[in-house]
Length: 279
Length: 279
Image (cartoon, rainbow over the protein chains, first blue to last red):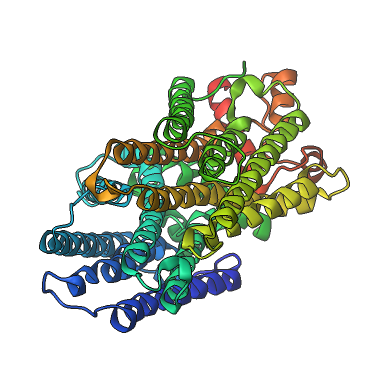
């Protein structure tokens, strides 16, 4: 495994994210199976229940995993292409979960004569799903189609990163709005305001989702935890990192594919650090 | 005014944020004055209405302004201390708005015999206000008390920045949950699901708040739009930026106060850029 700064802190936070993510999935399953009508594809309430289950397990947990997949140091020996395919694959799977989750709600609404798309939750939710699909198409077009010029890849990378983190955060926000709606509509006698066990249980699920999101965002935004660029890996293998590669020639930048300005800065930063250690 | 990369793009996005922020305040005022019971401090519904008004104008708009205040290039000639005081002052004002907004809800609940603190909105909202208060205390202690060691300031800066952006995002998410709650409770005959004009109007307010947040987050996270460190300003004034100051001595780092590792990287990056222009 490659050396990583603050590896212990990384592993603690990664484990925390895994625990909060998995416990959230257990909670949403407990909610629909124990407190609600269970799961079925019958056009009724049990079909609606697929909506929170698929959003939490797919659109939140799988998407969060996809975001930090490059950060796992034991994957740094894998090729960048393999990691890109895993990143895209997990996001594609999350998108499929989100689409099926939406179909479940429309089916349920239509069966129960409830209007579609009237709430702020539905407006923002549909917007996020559409933009997520656009992000997928642009991401594949930019970073998995070999003919895309490296200059386009670099120029688009800040937008790709920002959009990805914003969409992930928005999905959690929209999920918390959905939990709010569902608890108000579903809890009658006792109502939500009477705080029956289900209300407190699902509120805790909401807190867990927020903590999961916060941990993923912290991990994703630490530049020192970024996957080293292929150039650095190459440098490390050939001369132990002691050579000063501060100036990256345009030709070398081309080789590294999607390396953006931020990554180029990272190259300098890390090389300077290696210099400090070895000179 | 200091030169800024992509100044035109910055001004377009800043104007966009200002427009969406101010229109959101107009919308929330229209909501409570035109569609609801108006504003008063009478323990009734009109007192509740201060809650969304103060959250949108204070906890969202003022906080967003505080976050990007360092980015405004026409402030770069002001001392860092003055800007820190404006940053802290705006955040303190936003905190006061949030406290009064909470008092308004508790008063209204108590007058109407509605339980307090049962909903996920209230749990997350109170958590965010408490953490925001902690962020204020830590921020003042770290960056405005002169005796705080520079090493502490630098070590805490990534946490300060991350927490600030996370809290800002969370406030918007919690506000969208609050809008959802209020529309479900307040709209009866026609109900929320029947999409009366008020429902669509307030949904649009929710979209505007989300766009305002997205613009502030983009502006705040572009490293090339950061206020140049005092050292760079000094370098520019004394030798036009052509000297290679890549290696920042510990003594100079001390001088620059709260400069963190990220800022140090920025110094190198910008100096390299200046070198490219002048050599």
